[in-house]
Image (cartoon, rainbow, N blue to C red; front, side, top):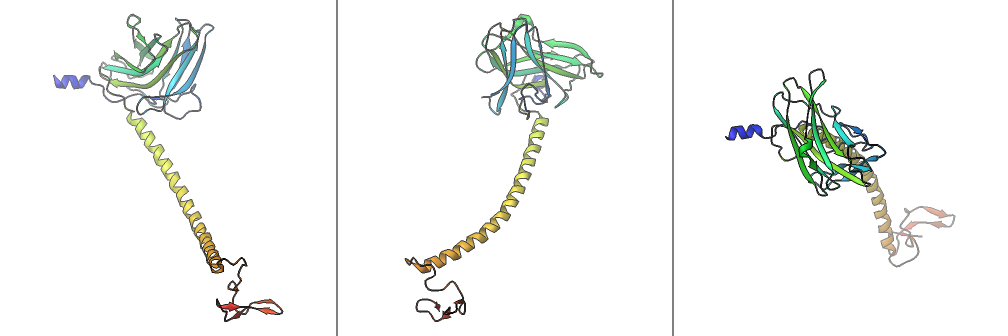
Length: 274
């Protein structure tokens, strides 16, 4: 049934700053996301940026963990800071993400469903019995959960568990939430596209202003070039002569240079003579 199949394919994209491209001063404070952790013990963690090799993406969110127990975890939680993630009650929703990291470490996806009062009314996440494991190369993982009848919004968790080893790492990119049971190919949300378009328009407007200022500078430069051209014309008349203005063409006839020297018309090779 084609109609039934179409209804199961991912619909509008619901998550803001899904590829972590929004400008921020630190990867520890990413717009649209909050940080959380648990059971770290004496382990040490860091959040960094990394260059992304995925098409259309420039950076990934990288987390580093040193000696974090296997029961400990580091996670990011979506917020409404960039986009409020609305859901359709009673319908399936699919979260997907690209992830890579230390081979074999456990990664986790989860929905937290919220009602009209913004109270959490349930969770739906990848089960411990069917764990997702990271690999050194990018791979896409996904999870589908059904929004409860009272659900109005939700937040998404992306999590990595410790491996109790030094130099553990994981990178996340292109996290996507859609209504339906099938995740389509990643694309930024309409809100993200609109924001990027507005930013580009602002940059173009600034560039136009700079070009206008440059045009003013170019006029002055043109005047300077005219002066240089006049100087070159005078130099050309000198030929190989090392004496500057040896034919006295640089002054008008009648100019007095001294009590005994006056520029006069009727030169032999030019218009003037001394």
